[in-house]
Image 1 (cartoon, one colour):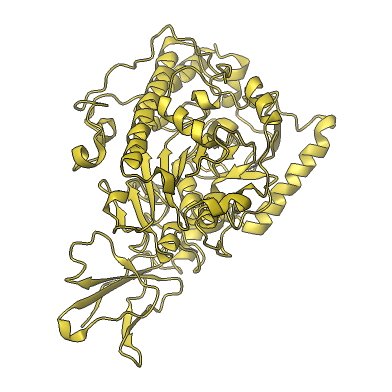
Image 2: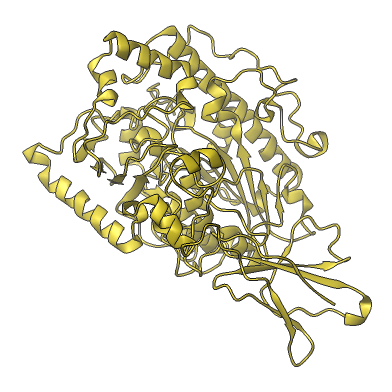
Length: 583
């Protein structure tokens, strides 16, 4: 199967025809074939960063990615997969919780870190998104249902993850550390394709190194990808033909950035191969569901942070243990809020009521969604509230601040040569019409794009009479979505944080766990804070355990053994409590 080489295009013609002729996915397939899966299949997520569908499996033949191609050959490709935001932290909030960022206070980029910048905005400092009390991280729900969960190693959830979230979280986290026979949910975050890797070269950043810190030879074996801190020149020759999207300046500096983007994808593909090979070596391929996807769209100007398809649309491959539907392309719409309910459904867990997405696969599979939605709010120091809705073909944007321009000057992004080229050409007055669009000083209140015929979303159809029905449809769909999930974007961020903190100057602290014994001598752990999740350890029994256990039921242990019960509580969006101990 061969696709045309259309760099960053949202819907290449051949791919579009293939999607239209490919089965949309029998709604009963997952239910009928679920019995073929292991009773509790393992789940492996391989997550790259800042990447649009730029591989051969999704229609871009600029480079070869053999490991992703072999995964696609035994899995299903989902080209209509969309992040809920064009930037990482809000996207990862949705992945971790199954809740839209605008609903839980995770919509501003970002709430953690860079205290100085946050204070310059009038905020009291870093804060955590405050979800409803019943909301838990999806990894905790899996732990409560018997899964060994690991994350290696990025978090960036817009809140501090409670100790209940992971059995292992860090650079050595791996399914290989689980107790024998226990099913696992493991995430590996591959950072080589991140935006920053386009312009940084030899600063000794660990992202440039072959793998993760500690024990790389016995667990990861990535030494031969990079040697030392210096980066090699891209292995994408200068004469490789990749047509640029019209909104980028066609200069050698820009093309060098694009070569680096492709080279980073090449390296990421090798990392994927190592993980697939480890799974195979461990004899786990036939019991593991594999997801590969990116956390949002591409890293270049007018891609990352924006709600065009170039910022939201990502490639996703899902491979089942029994190779069902191997090699197929499924055009269904998939949103990042669907990850949690889908994984629960695939592992036989009934999705909790608080989830705002829907199960796309498995026992609790829902009907296919008609729309996906996205949002943009503060980006670094700039506020610009935008909401987006999309069906299979049309994209709707609602701009709440039409008096503000499209382009936001972000110092971080302006380290990129391709961004510098656009600014240089803007200042000298030599931008093309397509390039100049991004620098307009006002926005339309509403925008509508036909992504099939205008893949770069350059022609606003909202004012044309023949598209009014579609405009009204997507406007109403957006209103219904915002009504259903709630939208904190209309509340000033400073006021929102004050409300989260009940008017205090500091983030609230979770109530310390209280230990009491029931009538048969078991320990019951409770916190006065609604929504607090309690983690515990029994020492010295757990001395070698990296993570804490999740408290779900009264604990039995021998008081005469000399063991110590240690417990800690945390609600998402609060600080962790102090530690309580019992003997």
